[in-house]
Length: 176
Image (cartoon, rainbow, N blue to C red; front, side, top):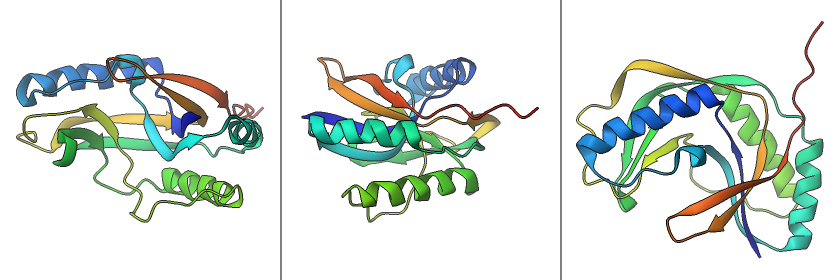
């Protein structure tokens, strides 16, 4: 079995900004940061999937038409369970919502059940944080431009998971 999820990877510049922010909030909230290369946005957590089903998901990914969009990250949040300190948005992200709904429509056809809770896009900055941040607003917002969805395998290791991309959607064609 393979533990799989669909997600978005930030570009290198944004990954650096996210990692810098994670280090800053760790200084005041404690906790454990994910590896810089593991920072991502999860769109659909699928759990343990058989190799045959994973093969079908790879095909789905390669043929999926990923919409492009932008997501503004400007809000820190905290899930008490697990002490998860995360970065998200104060306002809705219509492009992400379209991507999320379109992806789950395809996954439902493949026999997966969408989550019951509403979609709350976020990037985990800390796990086991000792307390929430003093403020939830960032002094400057970060912009995440997305155009490619990834099917990701979470490989368990001693210090958290290591992520391996199994497939990506095609990049959008440049307009001429």
